[in-house]
Image (cartoon, rainbow, N blue to C red; front, side, top):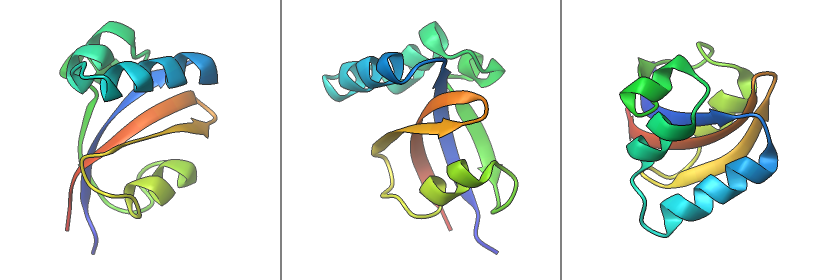
Length: 92
């Protein structure tokens, strides 16, 4: 079964999500941005979600995590929780 490891940043607006993505693409550290801005408890760990399989996250999340390139910031991804930036760090 496929497994992936990812980290994310959760915010309440698409504009905020896009602004944070620009900061990361300009060189800011993903984990530091997550610690400062993510509303998810995982933000304290730099947004790290650990390892998980298909179906363990919401469908919008799964679609990106199991199809996007590794180590590239994806998003904004809208879910019922808000807007996410995602980075897949490993997949097998």
